[in-house]
Length: 245
Ligand code: F6R
Image (cartoon, rainbow, N blue to C red; front, side):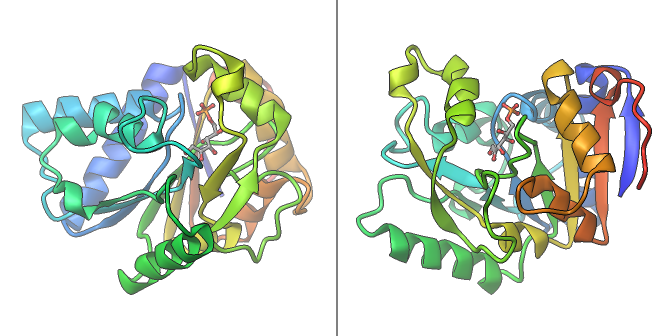
């Protein structure tokens, strides 16, 4: 894993956006894997600014998001579909038909899991997957204990994840307790992974990722099995850690 240390959230966002833009310019038909949450918001803002200023085009790009809350339709302001439209897709020239997010209101969720997994495979897989990390080491919504062999599946969210995500809802009771997420093996099949880490509350997770063992009790540790992972982390998250990777 390659670790790039940057000063703060803003620099992490700029650097990540530059990284993504370069890949999109090199391969205009790139398949991007996208994340939601607080971490990539600044990156998406930088992508929009670049699109407006320099005209980087996303017309041929296809995207696959990691996850969606069960029970929320795309019109719900807390759904990840709404988030992605609002934070990125509505402000660039992407073809919405090429933006894919698992459905949170499917009639048959097992079927939806198969559909999503097959859809990614049919497109030849994700070229570049953007990831954030949970304080408990989750990637996507793969909570501790998830099998490294998992494909797209339904999860019960950990209490700590529900609490962490409550900041986006008006009341904690509104946070869904289940989600549909790419599995760990789905994520690992991406040709390249860009993990973004920022802030004090991610310090322990980053330490464990860089220095701990590869173990299903800490999902992100599986990234050490991937040949092409870049981590962009800010100073606060890296702190004065020794990096053994
Ligand atoms: C989001 C996702 C999650 C987040 C993680 C960190 O699509 O899959 O794994 O990346 O929960 O969230 P933030 O960035 O809000 O700290």
